[in-house]
Length: 251
Image (tube, rainbow, N blue to C red; front, top):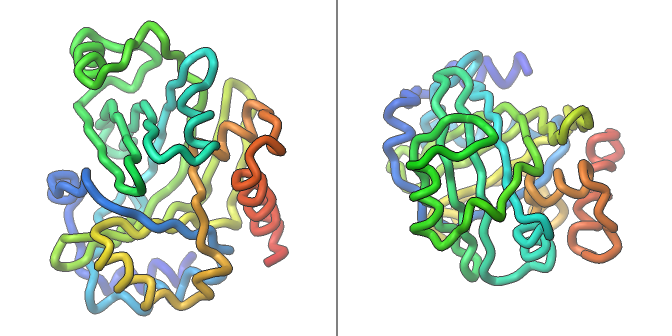
């Protein structure tokens, strides 16, 4: 990690307060699962064209995220089946500023739409949060917290601020006392327009087809923490095996 910090110290820095004002709530994204030893060249390749977002320590931003679902796990099921239209309900906490948001994240035919309001990072919903959910057609009475996910993120912003690349380390899904830790894997997401994504893919210094994935922290976390039958959803089973293999330093 020392090598990463040394490279990032040569980047121009974008303040966290400025970054959260940038609207990328309607976007496309491309995800990759990478072994940690392949990450360093990414930072080397992008320094001249990207800002690094200010973090709590060494450019890392700690994230905590709680997810809600129905008793029948409808959100998870729609996601695992690859439905063209699906959604997630979550609360996200930026721990270094103690700032939290209630978010509704929708996927509509490969496009991501996100709506959010400031919130408290609790297992309950305030009156304002309930009103927010109702406006989106979601009944809070049908929801319960089903998963919490922790990780540390480094965010690189294109200097035109029309796209970003996030690199998530130490992915850890949990439910109650059950916790899983993945320290040898980095989750990379390129977020922005299709043109931005295609441009960035050409600059990635690793085999694209080998590490490209439809990985979802929520979906995979649910499999690990709720012991759903993985065989029901072939795409999740493949990612599940790939994640375990990478984390065991077998790739």
